[in-house]
Length: 110
Length: 117
Image (cartoon, rainbow over all chains, first blue to last red):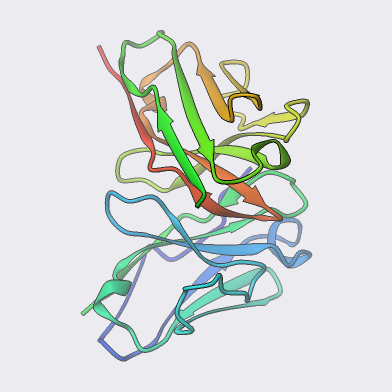
């Protein structure tokens, strides 16, 4: 039940792009297309922004995109906006058949 | 509209017990796996427990196994988490969440549990 590994922080200026990595193992990330990403503003509940590696729920801007290579998934936020400043968590519901979350990344918009 | 509303949090002494509830509406509650996820102050999200739609299959994180019990009442559209032998390490905001496929597409607002003397 080890957490997925994310960088603790990332930052970019408005309009720039930032990419967050999420590293697991073959049994959590590599062998499955079940990675999801969540955005969490301070004091708020997490919000789903990417599911099944690349898909966006209705209402989520296309500035958010996901990808995966081997045991590492990535979230890219393009055209950074002030409201994108938040914590971001990856998750995988892969071969372990339980929820595993990433360690979280705080994104700052400079 | 899907809604999840947690309740039951509060201040409890070490070694004490608490039962959390999550009232669900806006979807067919019995058709979905439900999960509890917690977040200690200033820390990340941690999966706690899950239960299938019929209430017959459950799993727990190692850190709560033997102390926490997840259950559900589909007639009342309510999810529960009975927490016993609480310790300071259990202090967190507890969220209930719906697992759709392999992702959490709806979350409650969370309920804060504080374990302190």
